[in-house]
Length: 399
Image (tube, rainbow, N blue to C red; front, side, top):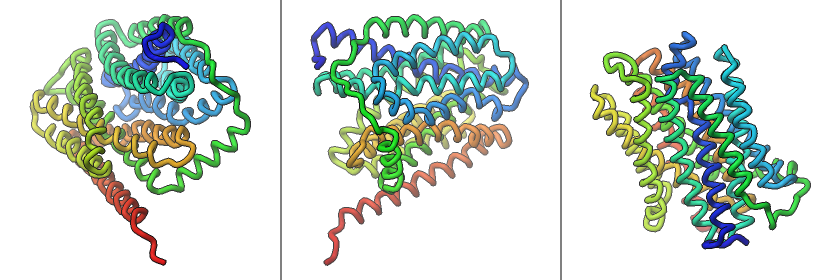
């Protein structure tokens, strides 16, 4: 087993963090570019949203299939295949001239990204000692967040100054370099054993988890929460680029630095569960995020930035608690349960974009607030049902 303070640990943890960083750089590269791409292709905001929605939806759909494949050919092999596909698809996108062709390529990108995302933690669990595992997972999650921020900001700056093709080429070159580094650094698996019959077992586990309402409600909370979080940022980008603010795309992309407030609250969620219930924390996180959305009704850039800080803080807090709830409450096939949570999470982010960006396109920010309030109310309802189900499970059965 790989233990801390060894050369093998340093190589493996660096490789996994670099891969994680790269995955989220690619996934969110186009998000700050949406206003620019809408102008480039002369399409509506809801139509250009496919550049983000196609990748997140494909990622959600492909998480479980990649996990099943890894049971046959190995975690390391799946991760390396995933990373190898990224520069190939990236360079291919440069030659595409229609929005729909580009959206299909983005879907292929999302499907490729899912390979690394689906099995990286499983690789760690099999190859690392328990102490090394906890340290590496922490770094891996931090690399997720940092990759998302850097991908968005770099995409916005390069596209605004040199065009979207330059941003894609930059990311493809970076992906090629990182893939080669990970290939060189990531140790071969020593504790992996091939499993057969996984498709049938996985299908049974998926059905079992979805029929468990205490798990499914938490998955739905994660999905709706992410639908609000990621797409309120997209809409805010459109709002800042439009009149009367007319902020350049490169500077508007800096709003994604507000994500860092969520990194702090995600770490605080563990302390919350030591004293209070996870469901009450989900309610608190939803409330903080909702207040942030309403604060943005004030027509000023400082108010919008404060709004995004609150949205990030609340959304990450809720996400951490819901994710942890699913992993803890699943009695069997925990890996499948957490994969299903991520399926709901990314599917929610994909579908929510069409709803909230549509609200913006037709009714402005007030429309977004109205539509967002409906989604926040849905989270409250799901939390209420989840709390009641938990109480029913804990109540003694009458004989």
